[in-house]
Length: 100
Image 1: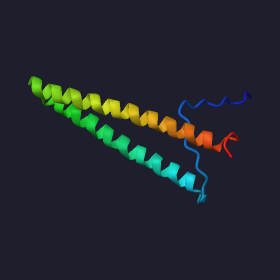
Image 2: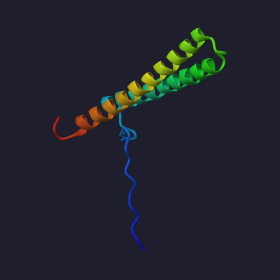
Image 3: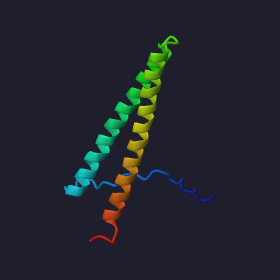
């Protein structure tokens, strides 16, 4: 029987140690939860923008407002994703042997 091949992960997970009271671990955990909360808000704004777009009824002013809401929510999601990547990079850099 062949050995299973591990599936690569493209987005690394934030590493936390259970029961650790390390300040850096707590800060990274809080930042991770804050990014999750802000991401949920951005998703809510995307849904709201879609609702505005559907109910605009062809009015150009309402359509522009809906388009801007959708655009800004997508930009927000991109910024949040990049923030998460930077957080994971900073944590891996702090945990490496380079910084002691």
